[in-house]
Length: 146
Image (tube, rainbow, N blue to C red):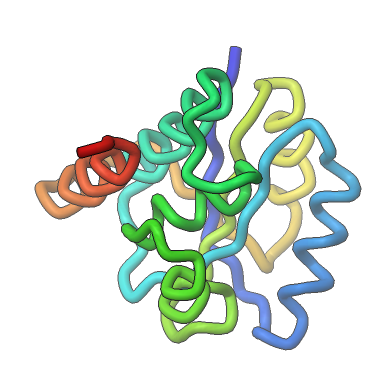
């Protein structure tokens, strides 16, 4: 079974690259991305967007060559990588969010690492607001072809 985990992260922009590389190296079975958003959506909205990336990876319908980039694009709400990096990359302005998606076993290991670390605050159990559903819908529509 696959799932998605989200956590607020208190990491300085200049440290984010090293932190991200370290997390990806320790947790190779899951997709991990750091994004900055003006407002962090509810965990359920992030989970739905993460599931879109996982499904796209399974069906060969990723928005980019790598699932990590697909996840960034969906969270940023754009198909343009340069726009996503500028507006939602970990060096952009806003709250930093760690998003991980993949097999439950890999997410469980990551969760254990994050729970004891005061840098991270896991996001769990929230309902989805209208704005959260809007983000999910926008992310889903990125994958449609006209």
